[in-house]
Image (cartoon, rainbow, N blue to C red; front, side, top):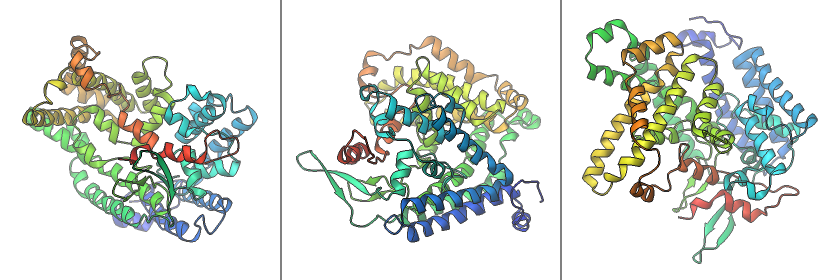
Length: 486
């Protein structure tokens, strides 16, 4: 099945054999090559064996080669985008560059704000997570290109903070904080690097199952069938609801495959180590992008968002939600739609997501506390909210899959915009402010972007010492691992 591509056509015979488009074949093969390269990188270019300069150079060149193989001359966008951004940082000055960088990509905007926080804001103005992420010196051009274009993340990410990446390259990822009996922090250093082999193997197994599911089941459950005239005319409402849920669930494994493989590649290179849990087991989820079990068993819209595309949610939280002066939830969803692209379906999904999020928050804050005291009642509540959440998520993301306006409105019209209307009624009837009992029991629940992600944000940030850095090494390590002392 020959298809046009600006990338390499070397694998066209394989594309024809597996009956997948050449661009998808190129992507998967390049990611598998990156996995092998990551193992080689960790083994032969370990920070104890070579300099940071060499690691930066190799990571950058391999990344650009993979981009060239996959995208052909389109790969120039990576170089041009990074080059223009770096030019702005140097020529215009970092004190002015955090605003225009919002039109660039996640990594560039993240670094822009991190430099702004580290060099042009007062300590007392920063949140704990911003203080951990703050960059206090300008990166060199090589460091900047390596961060943006390294082979481990150039094709599928995931997003990581600049400080995490530099800490990994310089070989300072394996410091940890443990809690002594008296509660004081004690910085200790591992004599040997923890092995990522188990984590990588587990993630590759997940990739295998996800790819198999996508190649078999997903193709038999197309989302487009939800707007088929014959389907809508002949199938009962309960069966339509079931098919909506099943078809959207079947659409997720391709994301599980891509994100988990990207995570495994980084882990194989030694990147992604978070620290040790209370049992002393190493954790390799520093830059993980999803938690599949929590996604599939979400009992709230918020819980789904907490565990889906985690690094993007963190990025939106850092660059928009925390900095918005008004309506942070609405601004964050709009930014997410703009970042995803120009398809109208993206905007329909995220605007619907605003209603869903606000309505779900109002429902949770006003009624949940009535159902948590009795375990049997709580179980029934969880089952009902799981069903409601899965239907609401499926209903919301259909336009994201269909992309165009006409089929998206065809779908919502066939459902009589029922969940849109229900959300509006909930917002009109229920107060957004917490009831007295609810506010006591749920005081720790944040408005939209989750407390869990905020904890992950602080927990997951490496730090490194540089000239003129106001934090000493112990303070930075403590900042990175506060939640491990359980």
